Image 1 (cartoon, rainbow, N blue to C red):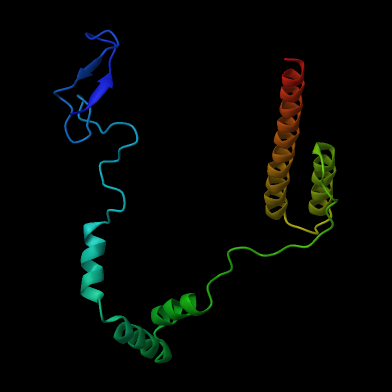
Image 2: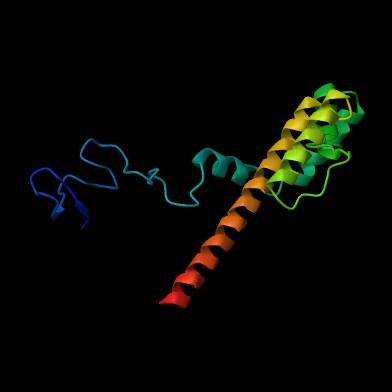
Length: 160
């Protein structure tokens, strides 16, 4: 049985919905937070392919390597993509001031802009670093707010 709150007909009482089946609402759509598949379920085609390939991985790998060595460009690309994949991210190095408060984060943002303007880092790298600085700034601000709240609560408890 599934119960839910409704405003029409039951006037916000809990009512049993006889039309709700398999996690779908009366319009036949899945309810919010329900994709219609159990957690961890896998695509049937993927499972079928994996079962066909089971136990053949070593032979298929050796065939791909042999074809790559014979000059097959697609097999060579496949092997190289597995041996030496493209780097996902490069490390960058430039001077960034120490940050302990929001004003320091502002100075750090200025140094990132300077590094981008002189070509020390690329604009994309600068954008990523600015995102990190902004996240750090927000964390600092939340920490300050939390300390203020704790101090106020301590003052209220002390006067009560």
